[in-house]
Length: 280
Image (tube, rainbow, N blue to C red; front, side):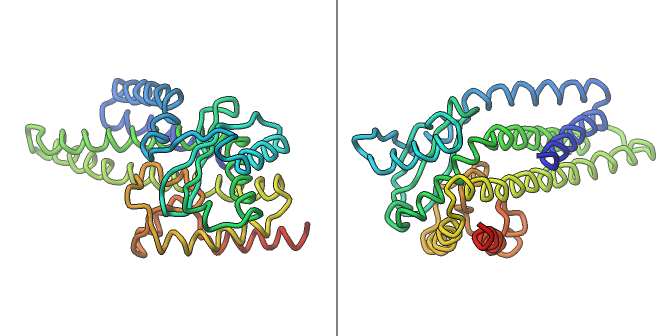
């Protein structure tokens, strides 16, 4: 948690510094207010937006009794209210949690994951998602993504302003190069920090989820199957801005893309879980 707090603080500091460097004190204030407004909107509506984005349908206990029983049991062990349960009609095996706090949370699973995993493995996956809710990762991820988005937006505006600004004497040329360099480096730094936060929270959710389910080996087995399943049937309608929500990355790209993945390497996650299983 300390690591995540420091990363969020650094990301906020980068936002303030970027705003000040690009437009002085006014730019700094504008950037901070814009981030607050965007975070406010994301706080209240991000869960509805992401569920609608993937066509998630809420299912009742009568429609999916086994799924509801597992979610209810895990939520009770975690000490949080039972989240709402959604199903996404997709062959890609995956799952995610969303919601601003444990009292307004939801878990969503694809039809693909229900077909691929056995009961113990599915329990391990749902425990991972319950852990995200318990740790309030969905809120942390939303804040990080919003601040990173504001930095990127400011950088784009600054780049165009610098290119079309009048005057090209020595002083203005130096300013132009400085703004151009900052507009390129700031979004990259923001992305790296956002990725670090996402990866840190994934490791923590694996650990917390394994303790909730008491079966780290089942989650390790599920991750192995999910990695293979997503490679075979990637989610074509997945949005990169929401990729960090899923238990495994729904997108598939080249080696360069994997360096900027929101998820830590699956092999390392499995190794840590198997080490937990050996000690439990």
